[in-house]
Length: 282
Image (cartoon, rainbow, N blue to C red; front, side):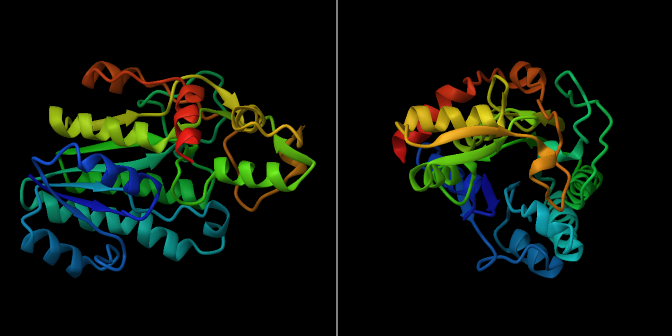
C-alpha cells in the first residue's frame, strides 16, 4: 500500500517513521507542513491522487491546549477541517484513515475509565476541535478508525518527561499537580498499535489507547526522577487550583483499552515499563 503519514516531525510521527524500517512492504509518504499543508484542501486532494494513496495516518494536530483558547481559528483548521479534507480525499480512492484523537473529548468528571461509547463532552477549544475532527473523518471516510490517546511522550519533541528531567536537574524544589488522573502513553507503543491495526486491516470505529495503569501528574513526575536517578529535587503535590491555566484539564481521563486489545490482539505494557524504555534511549 501507499500510506501517507502526516505530522511526521511530531512525537508520534517520528515514532511511526522509526517503525517503518521494520515494515518495508509498504511505500510510506512522511509529510509535515513543508511537504504538505493539510489545511489546504486542493493540496491534499492533489497529493492523495498523484501518489495514489491507499491509507492515511493523521498524526498532525494543533496540540497547544492553552494557546488554543485564544487561537480557535487555527486550532479548528488543523484539528477539524484538515482531517475532513484528508478523509474525503482518501475515500475517493476507497482508502482508509486512522485519525489520532484525545482524552480531551471528555470533561473528566467520570470516576471509572472511559469507554468508546461514552458521550463526548469536551470543555476546551482543543477538545471541541478534536471531537469535530473525529466526526468529520467518520462522516467522509467509512473506512476510518479514530484512536483516542492521552498524556503522550517520547524522546522526540516537547513533552512532560523532558520537562521534568530538565527541571529536576535545574531546581531543588518542584510542584506538580496531583489531582488530575490519567495514564502516560509512550508514543512508540501507540505507533506499534497503529502498525498492528494496518497489518490486520483497518476496522472502522472508535478505539482508546494508552499504556496500562493509572497515575497522577505528581506520580508520573516522581517516577521520572526516580528512574532517571534524579534525587536532588524535592517534588511536592499541587492542587489544580494552585496552577491555573487558560484551558480546563480533565480531572480524570483514564481510558478503557478493552476494545482495541480484543479487536486487534494488542498487548499493552504498563506505563512505568514503557517509561523505562524511553528513558534508556534518552
